[in-house]
Amino acid sequence: MKDMFNQLQPGPVPIADDIVNSPTIVNPISLDGSTQDSSSDEEEILALFPVESTAKLIRRVRLTMESLESEDSQATTSQVAKKSKNFPVHPVMKDLMTREWKNPEKPPSITKRQKLLFPIQEEEIQSWGTPPKVDVAIARLSNKTLIPVEDGSGLKDPMDRKMESLLKRVYNTGTAICKPALAASAVARSTRHWLKQFTEDINNNISRVELLESLEKVNMAVEFLCDSSIESIKLAAKTMALSTASRRALWLRTWSADSVSKNSLCAMAFEPGRLFGSELDKLLESLSGSKNKRLPQENQSNRSKNSFFRNRRTSPKRDNYFQRDRRRNDTNSFRPNRAFNSSRGERGFGKTFPPKKRPSF
Image (cartoon, rainbow, N blue to C red):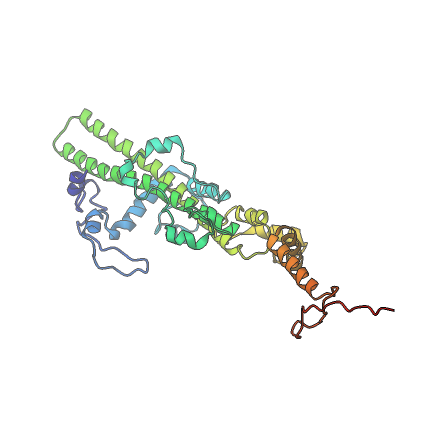
């Protein structure tokens, strides 16, 4: 594999010389648009496609897709010109993303076909295939268990435990995205090598049968790349949904309500642009009968009163406190043959006197 990657140095591709005109290696572009300095030679070697050829590639991709599906006849010239500068997004891809957003808390479903389609050697993903465990020293800060636990079961607040569970699912989904991406990278670079070899075979007058065999490999690889892109899009959309559910649990943590109500809000379908969306608006209108967008709060006085009596019944410490207070009050009460003082600070408190003799007649 390393020998194959070493042969795939950036350079002109004979079959696509109208797209790739120069073997120049383009420096990476940062998110703010500024060109970064080349800090890693490996990244430059792996970069095959020059950025300045993106516009040409987009035009060719759009022409191909437009020939395969009917375009809207009412589209204006400005809309067509604006679209021609960006990659098209197929409606099927939009529908796949929307499906993953309907149940944001659900973990990604990894089918048997996906496992067979993207097999990665276990040793390659052993170090990062599962969410990292919490360090024991950190776990002791968040729970009061006698034995330190590494999962979120030791967290007190239910929303904290929910966030821990959802964030683990986010990590697992990111791991699942890496598998089709790694497989697609190997297949795409192999396909590039096959196409270069195919061009050389044409120039060397190779037989038609051998050329068709080479094209069969390329066709198989392209179909694999199409399936890989679909799985990557689905998993990326699931990551967006899970991270949104985690943020919901964070914002609902301070809401004075029961856990069932909080969980129902976290499970609402994800709508891009808003954390909760229109389902929350409908719920608030049905609860209040108006457009007062406020969540109902539990009565704090009732909660504190109930907790007082609940603790009074179940807490042995509180019972002992009242018993001690009762015994202390009893010591100040009047007893026979004992001096009674209302104040504890007076002398003679607790002093006993011998009984007076009755006069004899």
